[in-house]
Image: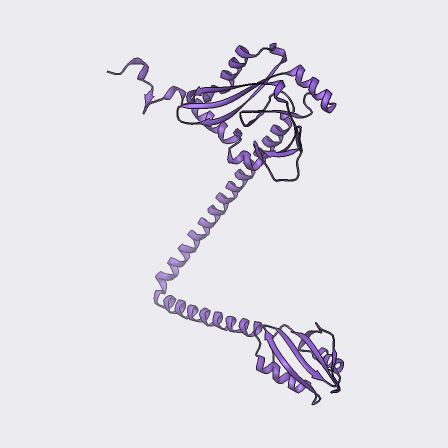
Length: 338
């Protein structure tokens, strides 16, 4: 016989707390610093302290250069920290549990108390947290003295405790939270719109496929044998066209070097000769000698088949031979050669 307290148990879980666990899981997904959403959508914060400013995103040091939010790191003397170990079941009511802990341990008045916490580790049984309590008046006095800031909401206030960065509630963190909520809403709207478009596209595609299927079935019933033969012929024709297109592309990309050599032989006079010929795709590189290298370059430039003729090196005389050495780069015009 089951005990009265076990009536709501299923596989060791109290079903009466199912809603709280579900909400806690969603809060963890959206708001925890280690959440993938938070890591991607949270604002970059510039943290000021005793040393150089450091950029943080979702509680971790960030390499991003731009930032919209700023925070001040409190000295250790202004922050009271405490490590807490709570049962995992308390995660659903973590805010209320920590508020009671602050009321029981804060040495400051309720109106002068601000606090924050950071989840350090979590397992199936326990939550390890660090709780930081500060005096609002002491914090504001420090901000006015060090930074000439007198607005409690101007900047975020952070404290370092047990190797973790803790954001103290009630200061300037609302700006970052508001921007994060705005990004979440925008992403949610984009996801909903995308899902609607996908459903519409799927519906239209399904309707078109259904209509096409009915048409194909009607044609197949009336002339199945002719359709099969026509399909084979279309397939063969498509393959042939693809082969021809591929061959034309290859010919366009890689013209026949023998034809280009013949063209150069026709264009150059007897007093010019080629020492080196190299061709890659539609680019030709020449090195040769001629009595008038400038005239050779001009003649090749006037050739309609050549899109561009350039000299990567200056023309130089070759000793007392009366010849000039030239180096030319030639780009062929698009289109078939020959």
